[in-house]
Length: 143
Image 1 (cartoon, rainbow, N blue to C red):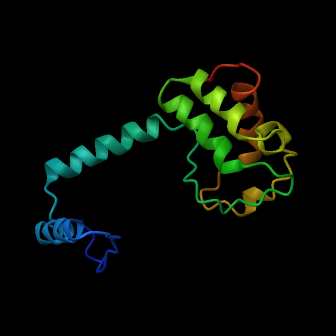
Image 2: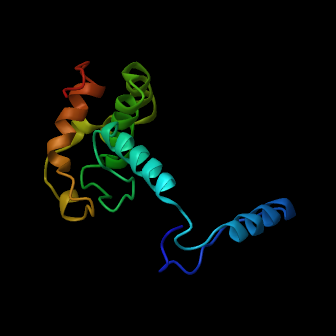
């Protein structure tokens, strides 16, 4: 939407009702079809989302594999989920349950191999000790 350079959209469908929904949506869509009110709404939502996201990781996994086995995207996901939803206890519990010790932030050696591959240019080696402190050592988020 509102991107004339986009000429094709791929949409997975597994039923005739989904085909009908997609056709209906395509008929209502088109380049530059959003008015200023809708664009302002989208900009506002985008800004709020950015404010509630501590680490700008998209989860693309280009930083992987970590030479030491840290699951960088998952660590950042648990950190961001707790921050965004203001539910650190749940993030800590899930972090401890679903990541093996070697996959957690505490295993980061700060070698920075991952940083050379990150398209977001996230200073991963700076975030890992913070994530470890919050998710494994009980510290709170610092704003």
